[in-house]
Picture 1 (cartoon, helix red, strand yellow):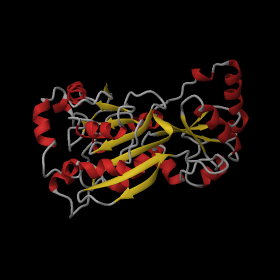
Picture 2 (spheres, rainbow, N blue to C red):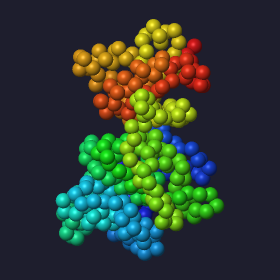
Picture 3 (cartoon, one colour):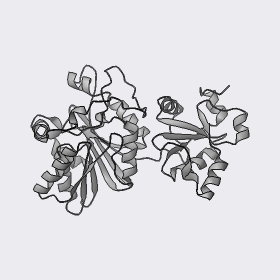
Picture 4 (cartoon, rainbow, N blue to C red):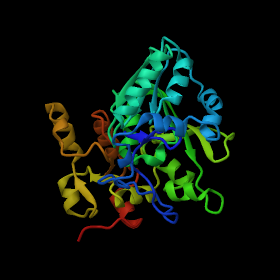
Length: 348
């Protein structure tokens, strides 16, 4: 994931400005939301950004201690500072997690990562290490992080879903996501925020939820920003079916954040199917699992995979098989007939 926040340099993902009017999030993951927004960070002069981001009058700097306090870090935890920039919060977080913990400074710019690790060493914080990320991935091992900390950086993500899913995978089962981001309200926010931040809180929270998280808490102590925490969510009901609404499913299919697969049998497919769906019979998936060839499926791991069948039972079984392989698969309760009755186009 790449980030160099506006507050400190964590501007890591190119994501950005979509004009003040576009209030629906562009989650499509086939191309960057705003190519080139971070070009100026290809070879940053770190000292200039230290002066810019670590100064009085910048809200997150002025409230840095309260922000870390509300993150509720405990000794021994592994923290990923996503969009570490000049390392302001990396160093503060390292003091909280202590010598038995680890803080990973994650940023798209190697210059920032090197500076953050070096400045931490100078301060005696040997528990800090660096990780240069990609525009669509934080490049951290699965289940390796207790807390992902994202401050003034999310609005720079070029690929929100891909990036958030890489964070989802990196977090431990009980892991926590901390988000500090700008409010973007027409008639209230500054011209700079309106021009720089592509969407408001509602859109960003929805994007994060679509990536597999749910809101855990919110604390109101900032003026121009908001502070929230999230936890990982299975996004399923007691029957193992996705809790995503059909409107959400339609939206994510439309913008290519998700795909739809039909896990019924060929004969059922032949009698009628959805035009957006691809056929992957559950029986075939189960046979592949037994033969050890399930991993050879031509399915994307950077998109949500919605599964559907006739009554929602096989869709859950298929989703579980795929999730075991690292896919973000979600079984739909609605079958073919109900989906077609709810506006999903059927093939001719």
